[in-house]
Image (cartoon, rainbow, N blue to C red; front, side, top):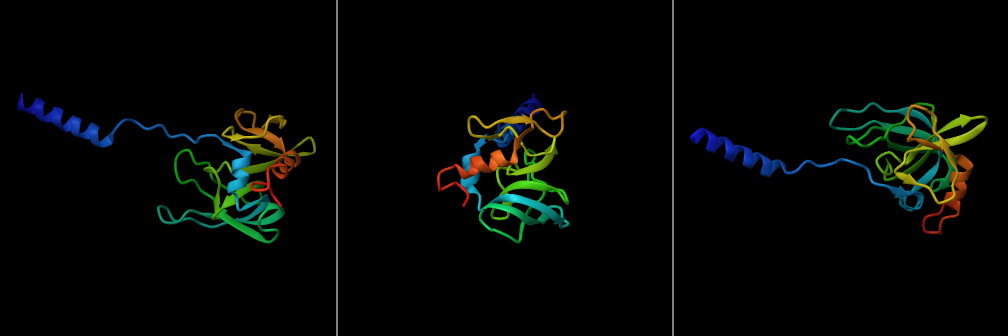
Length: 173
């Protein structure tokens, strides 16, 4: 009987400390919100990725600015290139081109601020995750990898036009 009471007290204490299970997800954001929060928006080519030190420093990407839509007009930008938690998709791949939304050296919205550029039928498209809500009427199509149907593609020029048409507080220069 004493063992049962002790076991019950231990279980109740553990459940009180641990609490209910938490669901880890990344909520939706609009393109306007990404643009407003970003210090830099543009197309970059990733030149290099530094080595990270587990639990101390995440790898950083250094990228050449190919086309600036907001912020720094030329040169190179740097951003963290590895996730911080389970739902974070932050990454970079050497030599890739991507549309990036950067603030304080970080890709915005847990990596959704990186939209890799891919070519389909001679058109340049940017891949984006469903958490990023584009303005109504923006045409999208399948993303670069058919097995990931939730990742969509948007024309780079349509994306740039959508950002340019945002109110001045969020729009690019």
